[in-house]
Amino acid sequence: MTNGDARLEAFQFGDPLTAAQEAVADIRDKVDLVILLANVDDRYETTLAEEVEGVDFLVRSRTARYSRQPLLNGKTVVLRTGNRGKYAGILHVRRPDPVGDFKDLSKQMQRVEFAQRRLDMLAKDVPEGQSLEAYYAKDETRLGLVKNLRAEEQRNRELLETLGNGYFFTAIALDKNIADDPNILPIVEEYITKH
Image 1 (cartoon, one colour):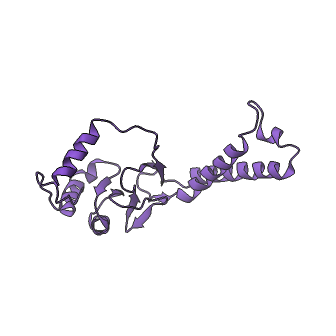
Image 2 (cartoon, helix red, strand yellow; image 1 turned 90 degrees about the vertical axis):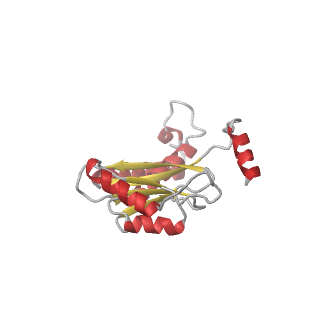
Image 3 (tube, rainbow, N blue to C red; image 1 turned 135 degrees about the vertical axis):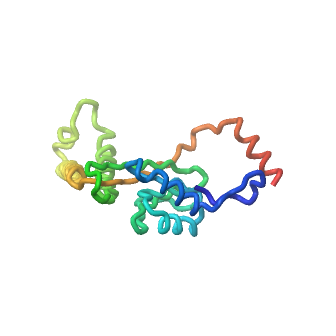
């Protein structure tokens, strides 16, 4: 859904709320999840989340903010991917129970990812084939840190398995080294000069 752009004179935009309500009503009983993609401003984000029955996840662009953690608005989980294509978002959903509510697993997953990043940093100087425990065997502080990080990662992974229906969102910063498609820039420049 989008609330449009007045500069796009060749296009007509209907009311996103009405369009979303009609589309969701048409598919809700035919699908397991409803994910609404919305390129809208703050006002429409709130309206869509609160007034469209049956939306499980609302993924929103056209916002300078992006979500590290999903926001709950009524029964709808709102995720923000930011603007200008700086981030790609990955929504991870696990649903072993088709009627149970969803739980936000973001905090547990962030702890797993934190432990993994720290362990990866500690592994930088470790020769290939050698474990962290063997490499840091004579350094009690670092060995203790390795053991604590492994335990924290394991605890949170086990917790994730016991929580039933859940979701977490990962916002990934896009790589600045990816070259732009040379065919797109002239289209953008032509549009900007006309408007």
